[in-house]
Image (cartoon, rainbow over all chains, first blue to last red; front, side, top):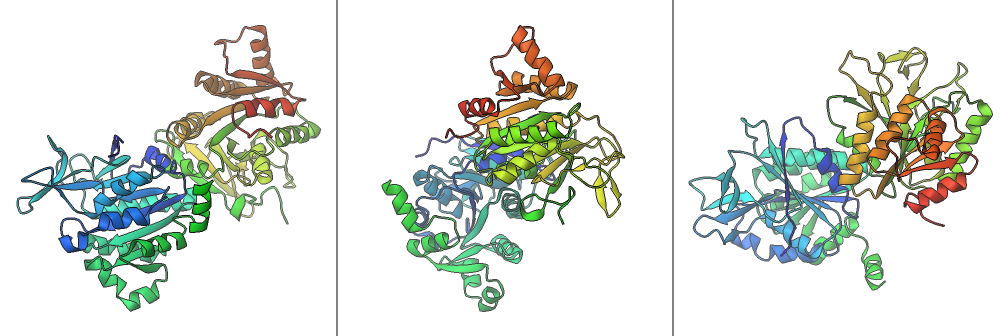
Length: 257
Length: 256
């Protein structure tokens, strides 16, 4: 397991972080991937083998990655991790040491310091609590102010802003990858597609990723949105075609050198 | 027709970002620096007082030769001055643009304080004061530092922002080296040199270029400079190769 100790930053509405922006540029390659999708409402079936799926697809990745920055742990047994999209970056990071990961977490309620870590969300109806993920390079906690929490949409809105800056001012390529996901994910798909930025929907991952992957009118009107099968080779080929990974030939040459 | 006012920055676009002196440097401006092919940064400080046209052409030639192959971020004050016929009268602030134009992976930036109310003159030309000082259109981006909407800063009003950026690049963006080169100049140039020295960055004064650079060089050679510094170097104005080799020794430019 990685020995990274994440740096935690807190941002009020209207603030900016030069430090985070610059640290993202320390990734070896000038690409940024935003990974979004299902967390608490993703079924066990949809989550099956999804960690290895992405770890294999992203082998050799050396860019920046933005994700939700949290981990869900069971209330009954904190050692049990509930599978969610936010588990993927740390698994990729294990095999991709030249990437930089940033978790963006909206502070939707008061943060609690517990023996399990920093708890950012907990409700009586859920069997799990949500903590700050311990395996990431940096974590940005977003709030309106110390007294006023943010809404869940603040996560993708902050990511859109970071990606916009990286694209426009640091010459980064970007890609939004969508696996499963509900209402907030849907709004992020639409916001990103509307901007004309590349989007990759994983067909077969469930819920809104599947809904939009089968929406012909949406795909035809947004040529920047493509669909990959739930298959590591197919995802990898799309990553290469978007310029997120180097072409296989070049990668092989480099690895042999 | 290309004139001194034509935007010659790559892509035909120079970004102009405005920062209040009480705020931190804009992340977008800092990100522009990271577009450079190599993670090194040089700030050119100084002036051209007492120099004639031949001296200025020689100054440009000196830097072009010394910095051939430079792939980092180079910056200076972000202004340009031209005569009434819109003919370029090269200044120290034109050096980054010349270097970037000759070295494709190099990024040229500039910073300037807002010393007066901004104004549009003639055919919508943006100028910073009544003397025709304008944003330098050879730079990829310029940071304009102001003291609120109505305040006016002195000409050193951008220095805190400038040094904040260089410190951030070194601390957070993986920049291997940042440094300052001084040519001629007055009290502000001396301030920049001493700030750079204090930060422990490689700092070069060009002996023979005039005024502050010469004074500092003389003090250093006489052992009267306070504080004395192991990271401050005197370079002869007639020897661009000496500067080139000094920059190579600190990794600013790859060795041939």
